[in-house]
Length: 308
Ligand SMILES: NC(=O)c1ccc[n+]([C@@H]2O[C@H](COP(=O)([O-])OP(=O)(O)OC[C@H]3O[C@@H](n4cnc5c(N)ncnc54)[C@H](O)[C@@H]3O)[C@@H](O)[C@H]2O)c1
Image (cartoon, rainbow, N blue to C red; front, side, top):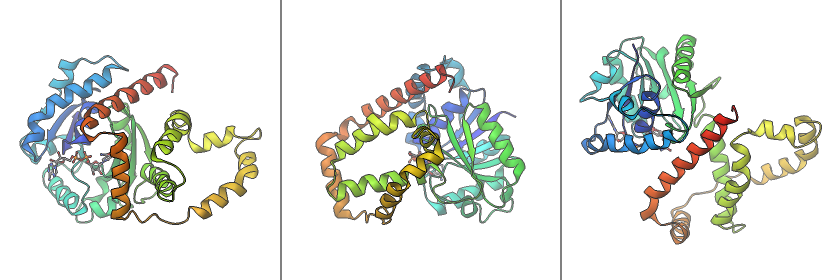
């Protein structure tokens, strides 16, 4: 059995489909929106172009490994794992997981791509909660090789190990949370940064352009190769302990100042949007998305060449 079921073929589902199909899996795709379905293989063509940047792609084979299905039952039957990628809405996810339970064998892993929701909530109404996880990717998962597996306290160790193996064979780098928390690791780190970016902008310390530049031309370049703990180990001759000893006073002082939540008021969002539209057009969003994917694929290529 080498089938992966994809439920929801929007931004994330289509990208997952390409990621799995490119590594020997047969991918069964279902989306409730006929427009998404009719456009699906055009999107696959575009995503495959990104893959070509860092690996050879047999486009004909890749496309023949993806099958569009008419209903949920078809993607559930005989699948190793179902990657749910519908809208981020707890009630919708709970409902669709109940449907999966109806049609999928008890051995099939039920994985949600959810960005924030807890697996214990999504699987709350299921009889077999032990095979449910959140498996959260980073956009776009056909080129970014990351997935964070968040089990609930009911998920079995066997399911976690099996899921890890599946993602690894599809060339993803899985991490596993030791216990569940909303937003998991990725969005909690990203959220902390986003809060600070908003605070600096809203309180008038820097422009959105300059805040973006600080990421693009400084932190982001390092972060492609090193995490925060690895970086701290290189920040002082004696390693991480030395770094924290030298800088903890400053780090703690900032953390105390950062200990509040921006309100994200409608008024602020309107102001942010208007400043954003002055420098970036919404009409070239598709072009910018393509450029993003291409540049990420080039970073992936560099990392592969460097044995990372
Ligand atoms: N966009 C991101 O940056 C990102 C990153 C990681 C994870 N995620 C998560 O992935 C999930 C999907 O997000 P997205 O950005 O792909 O959204 P999206 O709106 O692009 O796609 C959702 C798709 O699900 C389909 N759908 C909705 N209800 C359905 C149903 N009942 N049955 C079948 N198909 C259904 C829609 O037609 C749509 O094509 C969300 O849970 C989101 O939190 C998003």
